[in-house]
Image (cartoon, rainbow, N blue to C red; front, side, top):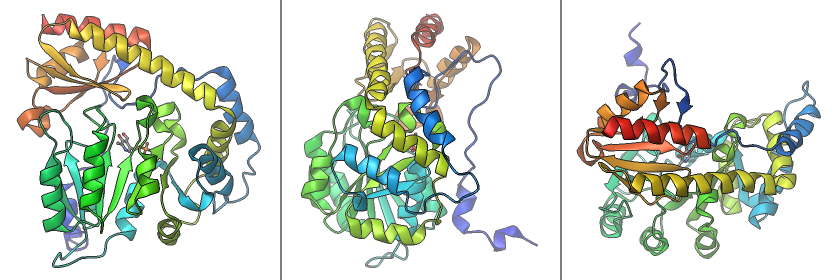
Length: 362
Ligand SMILES: Cc1ncc(COP(=O)(O)O)c(C=O)c1O
């Protein structure tokens, strides 16, 4: 049997996600995870909740306790919260539900700036949707004119805007996000705030004022990536539609219990992690500013976006030789050839990176 007669044609252009693995890595700074700075108290809150889970039972299909905890923190109602196994799953379910072909488009369309989180494109293609990308401007901010033009001509179902953006680390200008939202009254604009805690600000207010806006959030970047919990804050009608396309028990009972407890009782401990990473981000940015051969985009996330004079591929290989793993974007070519992304880690990992980079660039 020829499998290609069965598989979706778009799969031919996709590759499975395989994280880079190397021997001898002492500083793993490639995946935008938080460093292990979780307090003992925070671990205890999570463990206590997990130990109470009835393992012979299916999870709560409505994830009510978790949605209540999220809603209370965000100042909204549980009916406006949709939870998934990571925001990755929420992105996929939005692609499932919001896929109606519109106008003369033979398939649904999603639009995102570029570079941005790759799953917007990959997930769309895996669902047979068209993915349109509009380059960010020279400061890695939104190009409102071209975005608006693309919205007008392509009639996207969904517009993705990550702020702070991955991989560039900067927050998009609020007025530019607002302008894009205004240009897309017939699309769902998903503002992905996966790194919002590190920016210390949110565009939730924009959602309150616009019914075409939803906010995507996750606990993955706060030191809880293993639990795989992300959520959408959106109007209740959209949550109800997404409920129709998810698996009935899409978030594990253990994850529901742990994240609900952490959000209810562990807020200040989560903030300690954020504060420690933000302090390291300032220290790293200042140290890198003194180094020649590298420039850094001001970051509001838990990682830095570096441009090196030497090709990123060589710098990445040089860092690896010193046991430091970061992400190079040289494969994307063009203006990303000399760009690297490095996650803020523990102070000793960050020092290791700084020493290694200084040697590699010398
Ligand atoms: C902008 C952005 N959104 C969403 C995600 C996915 O996060 P999650 O772990 O919640 O699936 C990531 C992960 O890197 C991200 O960078």
